[in-house]
Image (cartoon, rainbow, N blue to C red):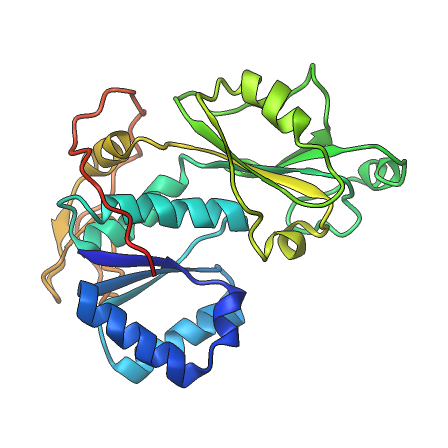
Length: 277
């Protein structure tokens, strides 16, 4: 069984020595660690994890870059924690991070786009954001999209069954997200969650409602992951998906197939236990 963590800027507040002791304890308890980090190589959070892995001189820590907004990254970590309670090995679990990110629809309702740099913002949108009361819907994943929030022009959502996680910041009513967007995306359930500490920085404003449509059924997640070809790493012996073992970095001859269409019928084990940090 592996431990899955979403590493954030909050971890930098922990002294390196203490972070090292905590990582060693996690490895002793769970055997392997899958750490989700920002995609930028120079990001301090990502560099911290590389420092820890180098200090441990261990191939039991997989550092997986994920290019997702903060709430989507947190939900991906939650999904992997659920799958860690099934019979999936650590190599498959690490590879599943990239696979399952394809099934996350992540965005935000923004009160301002003046400092938004994660998505292209036309000059006209910048000017419209100066008008009091104007709100914009920004989709960061899987396809970038930015437009004024309009009940009759909701951006395209997932074509499979999802739940909607909603995190409310300052000064923006979540009604449009929980109403028109949730109905257009045919979400089964709306879940209120805390706003991640990095959301305001990522979206360029604290006036936002961040949201993510995600697969909540661990059985369906298991079905998605087990539908993909698995190979054995020739170096460390772990079973993996994808073209590289994310623990020892060795290349794998097999290639991951295109993600399968999601169905609502679960064929995998639905037994899971979330592993907390």
